[in-house]
Amino acid sequence: MRKLYWLQNNLRLQDNPGLLAQADAGQLLLVYCWRDNRPWCNLTGMGDQRQRFLLESLQALRDELAPLRQQLVFVSGNPEVEIPRLVQRHRIDQVATTRTAGHYEQQSLANLEQALPVPLTVHDGNGLFAGSELPFDLQDIPRQFTPFRKAVDCLPIQPPAKKIDTLPPPPSSVTATALPATDIAPHMALPIRGGSVAGQRRLQQWVFEEGGIADYKQTRNCLDPLTGSSTLSPWLTNGCLSARQIAAAVREYEDQFGANESTGWLVFELLWREFFFWRALVDGPALFKASGIRGKLVRCTFEPRNFARWSKGDTNFPLVNALMRQLVATGWMSNRGRQIAASCLINEFGIDWRYGAAFFEKHLIDYDVGSNYGNWQYLAGVGTDPRGGRLFNIEKQTAEHDPSGEFVAKWGGQRPRQPEYVTDAADWPLPVDP
Image (tube, rainbow, N blue to C red; front, side):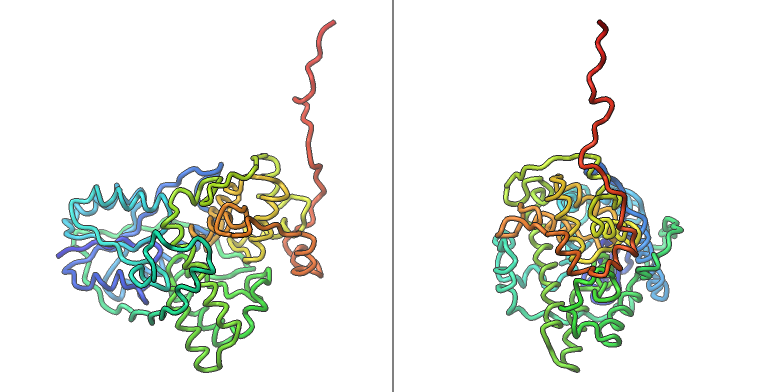
């Protein structure tokens, strides 16, 4: 039997149950589809750092597959078009993939199933729990995080599946395909590379060598990535690490050194990610509507000048400027920084939250559709926040998180003050001849 496995955000050989399930094939074709860009909120494509990290993750997986005499076939285009072509060309009998969130992703999966002349199997995604383990039907998932957390707290997190050390060979008709070239290097402020090996190295380093998990709750809001945050999210998002691998490392640390509030907090944040994943599957297109999942249309606008100033880090808020410049340069921003920057766009400029979410989608190397759009809705008051939105006092946040001004100075956050409004010459009345 010939099988095709479509890899998405599970680019690893460790704890990859969907890929492990293909071991009974006579021949196995591994495929990654580089999707066509969709214009969205005046933006299109990936930022340099996000694209760089993803390409490195794909190359790292290729390197791991080589000793197993396997290879990753890279194709550009929409999966519902490209995968049926591969099925026909290589005479595939079955297709499998892993469940991902996102409205377009779900549409693509449904279209693929209709287009395929062979069966399609969808495995559970890169989460803590399988869908069958949840204590409620998917349509009944709570709309707020706290009831969700209380419902799943009693569930055991399964240990990671074994590392795959053997795979069926690819069909003989498969030819090697090159990955797109990139000359972008990691920024010196966040010198991390994509790939499972790099992710496991960082997990080991941060948890056991540095002991960063011991006081994580106190340091997690640091604005620089390597001074308090775990920075595991880029590997988690691309599936170079699994959520269960991270949870297993936490358990191992607790067994050796004891549990505390900080070790529990990292798992708590994994549960937030889990919550947004399942909510994204249920919410579908509502995740991208201005009125959000609550159907609550908040008064907003789109003023292009203010959006451009926010995007380029050229506002009258030095901390926001520094955060936005950090994002574009490195592809990363702390959780607290994202809240501050989002609050600025929504509350100070009154701009439709979706433009900010789309800008984050473009640049974040740890972009995750459920977490990104779910958190933006949360801040805008149209999502899962029972209090109806959040307003951050930027002066207070600056005093708390950058009291010495070191972060603002590092990222050039002090910019010439801009007028709140601009009167263009075109706004003046035309002269009338006497």
